[in-house]
Image (cartoon, rainbow, N blue to C red):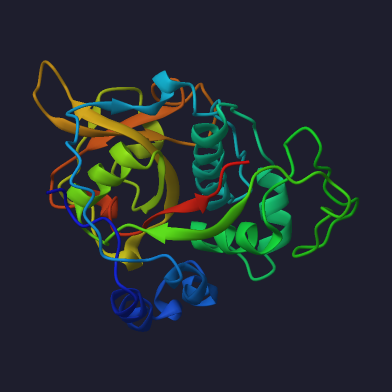
Length: 268
């Protein structure tokens, strides 16, 4: 049997109750776990999990974007997962508007991907990147999505069992790319290639300072070191064409499995 991917309603409530938003840099306290609990169950897929997964080869991962310096990593990670879920269901990979999520959900400052999924669930989908235009002289928390075509359909989001790398591996293999929030390891922003392994990188929720999209995993053929294949949002010039390989099966290094989530969509 596979590892348990999702938490029970009691587990998710317990997780949110233990979080003190004043101890984090982000506003997790603003998230609404009730939306997620509609679909969270403790299940095992029983599926045979492959040793290597790279969702880019399936054509369901959009190109690497550049968030510049606007603090929207959480929105990029969430939208990336939503785009991939829609591509899996429809066979079409459509870039959706990260800016719409930023404009419509950041009235309180930086957020986690949960906030993006909550917004997408309420509005029902997202406008495409090509169609969305931000407000002129926009004020934080105001957005201009009225009258724009909504693409996709989302009715909730799932949360991978916190801290469980095997559960994250199974979720990536059976569900698709998963958004995560991490503590950036030493040398992260100067990364040029290879597998980054920082044993001093924390696994605690309160240490997370960046959100990214895990699109696969594998084991390096030379070093035999397990890794996560991670899509960043600072352009294709960074790292390995916009990606980084982070150490896997190292006691949840850098909190990569501590806050993992994805949208639940219906075929469109």
